[in-house]
Length: 97
Length: 97
Image 1 (cartoon, rainbow over the protein chains, first blue to last red):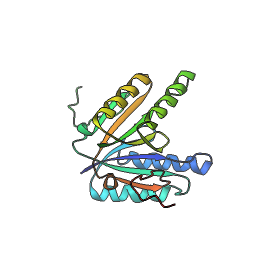
Image 2: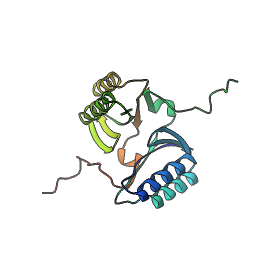
Image 3: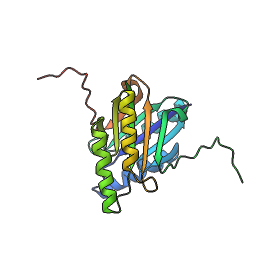
């Protein structure tokens, strides 16, 4: 499994752009967690990585939008520092009911 | 030197928030390149990393804003894939006049 970061800028000046933005976000949600408005952290295997990449590529308008996919070093905790609001939920943490 | 990624969400509902957003962006510009609206790639040494982190921490309102700093594995080219608009300029590339 690989930790990846997906960041995107989608041009929302048109109705079509706003549709693309929603589709990019809903697609990323299938593969990971939204940690900021246009930033998702995903933990994916090779097949999921390929599928996510292909879906995002087919959604955006390459002349207007930007998608960046970063491979993060493991373990995740050593590669990210957060200041302020942190929306990340570690599903490996014990669930306290 | 380390490759880091700075991503941020700043609450801009108030004038003060819009001021914080501008300050976060101008601070990041001192250390790297804006590759998306709220995403900067920086190549920094340890001292610059500490300075950038402290400045950003002092700018934001931790209850309203979010800063994430990711350490990227080297070399940079192997850790990032871009689709659509790519604003990154590789200053190590030969300058063709």
